Picture 1 (spheres, rainbow, N blue to C red):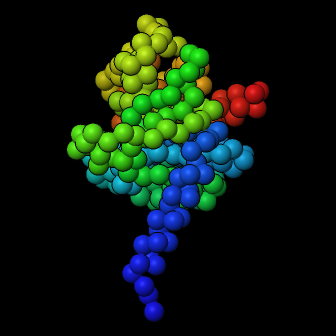
Picture 2 (spheres, rainbow, N blue to C red; picture 1 turned 45 degrees about the vertical axis):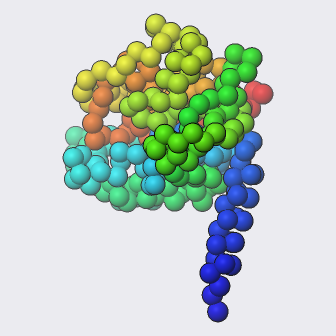
Picture 3 (spheres, rainbow, N blue to C red; picture 1 turned 180 degrees about the vertical axis):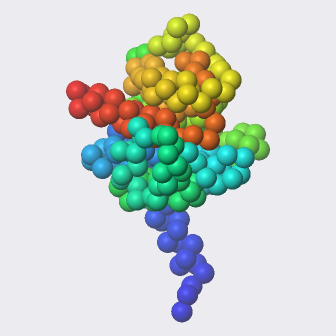
Length: 259
């Protein structure tokens, strides 16, 4: 016989145990789009303690909707090696264009990263970073509805050796860092350069090029990288996002192992 109280007890007990265990991390990833999920998948597979914080109900970022809600995405040949781990159907359209069902690939990214050990916290908004000794060493979290309703509820802190901003176009966490701490980033101006208009070819290349550590222990990937460094937008082609996630994984792994 099912007991209503027991159902609630199990959910509360296990969620808060998961949260408690993940208050101290190797890597905190902010944003559950393709670059954040790819980075998290590989870091967790390598044995690092990783949690991903997603503002929305469902991780996946803009990949779910394909192009203008036509749920297909395009990737280029260079990203096919990254996709090997995610068991998706890829249709070769010739001339270097490959087509994937956007729902299939997004679902696979979420599932595989979770199975690899990434703890995904959806409906959690990262509202600040922890800054000590001129280094980022954690994030500050609150419930998304609390932030959207502008309720005066104090947040909680998650300590992390590395933080990855994978928040997409707004580069939200990098923007917070600059605005609140007035720090100088590893960009031409030391500030947020701002995203340029659409140019798929340049945008794809720059997404990978701009994936870097921009402040001590703080990295950017995906469209957040282009927003920070002033790269072009690329639209519904996602190879660069996948490659950016893989590059951020390699950078963070190398730095963690040095420590």
